[in-house]
Length: 92
Image (tube, rainbow, N blue to C red; front, side, top):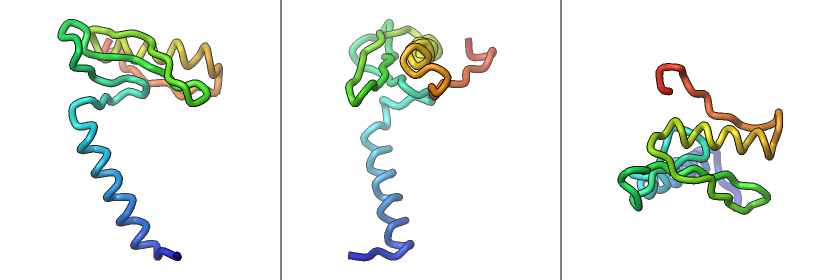
């Protein structure tokens, strides 16, 4: 079945909206960081995916600390090819 560019674009937009609704309260602006409802004192969890397996890096009180944990793990596993979070000095 061939799709026109318009149909493909509509499908992608619908998927994006559906995913965004599912992750409404758990998203983060950082890669490898998500918000958890299990802990009130440490609401941010950090994780990394290695060979299609998730490795839990810990829970943290701030989103920035969780992002730093992800950055450290990404450097360890992927080296210079790692996709790192950009953290401003104001956020630390």
